[in-house]
Image 1 (cartoon, rainbow, N blue to C red):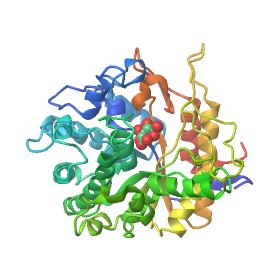
Image 2 (tube, protein in one colour):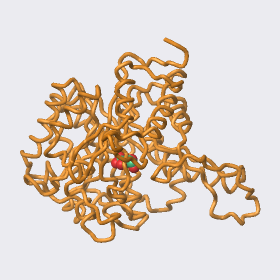
Image 3 (spheres, helix red, strand yellow):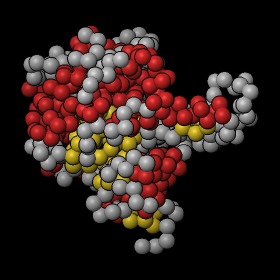
Image 4 (cartoon, protein in one colour):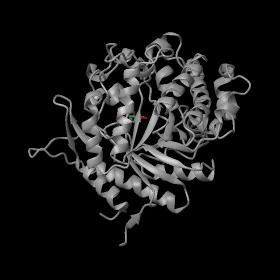
Length: 451
Ligand code: GCO
């Protein structure tokens, strides 16, 4: 091993991630019910350019080719999500066998190719019919999710060993119900807080059900985590960044590890948390096998109240490398988060379930897509994973976001995150130079930080 080279642990899991609504298309085929994202994207003005996920990457029809592509890239694992309304078009009750068969065949094909499936049960495409009855802010959703988790883990649990209950409950709750940028598009903070509690409760109630159906299961939950730094050392900015940390990180981490909701958040939300029932916090803190971490960037927090006497001039500015999402490239934040999860929260195992960047990608005259910025982004974040492992953080796997360019929610197809380029007119896939770079990293199980 030459200088600058780092060999990852032997059993390190190298993967990519996707999500059902972002890639599948076939939005109303084979008995699938409508999801909140179908409804939202079909509502004029909600998505840039009027884009929808109706066709997306047409993965529903092209999945065999996509699995072959994954095999060619040498991927060891594939994190994908299941579209709840494909399985239970009415939210619960009658099962759509065609929907089960789709995922069942996908799982078989992955296993045949030696690719380990990581199934996310919920990546934001709630059956619209459940939203019509109130959605995540209404408690009965917890039983609906549990039934859904039961149906899927019964059907796939003989083959799928890795389960993620929810993807980014903060985004589901707050971007969907309070900011209104995501489906179902509400702007009601109390609804969002109730939604976040019922999401966590759904997770907690589903974990034992998945284990019962799949005794060998590794079960976890994926959070979007991001360090929040004060823009100056002033009291006002420090207070604001502590609040933001509570809102994005601690509101989910603390209850999951059995610490209950952070007191500063409870105080800040006031009596909006009356929906908590006895026993809920125990249900939520059920032990899991791993935590999934989605990391993209940090936050730099400036108090709104900058006229406050004790505020000071800003001292922290974002760096000059910014992605197409207007997110700062800040690899060190991943290291900080990982350290905190291990040393403060004693998390026993971590998978980086998403990490990646959107840049403008173009097909050159020779049909290649060269994306050096993405290679650099991935490399520098993997370097931080390596450093975290070196100080003892149990990082077990890394999933690049994403396999394919896809439907980036409110931005539609305008942001490309894939390591594989997708021509949305022809559905042609072109592995970018980042895919070839990642293929080599996986093959060698080694990172050349100097190159
Ligand atoms: C996320 C999402 C992805 C996004 C990605 C880039 O979990 O936030 O899983 O669906 O596409 O994060 O914004």
